[in-house]
Amino acid sequence: MRSPAPDSATITTGHRVLSTSPSPSPTSTTRLSMDGGRAAAGGAAPSPVAASPHPTAPSSTPVDVSSFTHTPCYCEENIYMLCKELMRIGVADLMGTDLYVVFISNEEKKVPLWHQKASNSDDGFICWDYHVICIQSRRNKGEVLDLVWDLDSDLSFPSPFSQYVSDAIQPLAFGDSIYRRLFRVVHAPLFLQSFASDRSHMKDPAGNWIQLPPKYDPIVAADGTTNNLHEYIAMSVDDVADLESMVNDVYSNNHGVVVNETILPRFFSRLPHP
Image 1 (cartoon, rainbow, N blue to C red):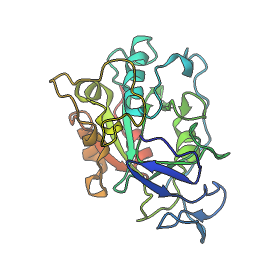
Image 2: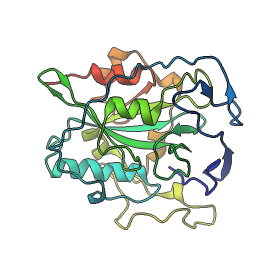
Image 3: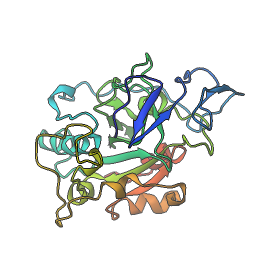
């Protein structure tokens, strides 16, 4: 993901500057306008996801956000390292079978999110070109305990899934606007074997770093691939398939499956659990 410009009303995506509207209030009916200008007041916008009461994240989880590797604007690598650390310390399954890496983007690379630390606004609103989080999908005697691990969020760490959806994603009725979010969900065991990045997306045409890279070596896939980040970021509404097939395909497709805002909660509720 690219770094936001100092002015909270503008962000940089690649070499373009995108003007965005001020953050719509989560309790109002304000919508982002189609052209990215000032939001226009509209009628009541029904949310495609009904927010449920937020369960509390397990207090026994022995984690501190500062203990994880974090390089600003390299969210894909941060989550790669987070998955490995959660597995190492026993917070996740040893093989990472309960972890899912989720790339958030869309066709226009204009992704509004809230509660982001890099924001200059009170509600943490920002518009990334893409973002990456980890969702841990767990069950305990039928109780849903799904958690979201987002190193760039000011919400609790980890956050209950329902809280993150309602507070950070805020699934407003974007409809067919350029701001509708898509989610590429990749099973962590596949991601850790298949993902690679040479970090070239963070260099300008002259080869200078737009943002300084992590200090460790670039990530190389198990098969020797050195860069496939773009294959995870690229997504379209045409990539969204039926729910049942996606629930099965997420365990065999190296690049996961693409779901929309409406399907996202239902997708995780349908995943098989022992």
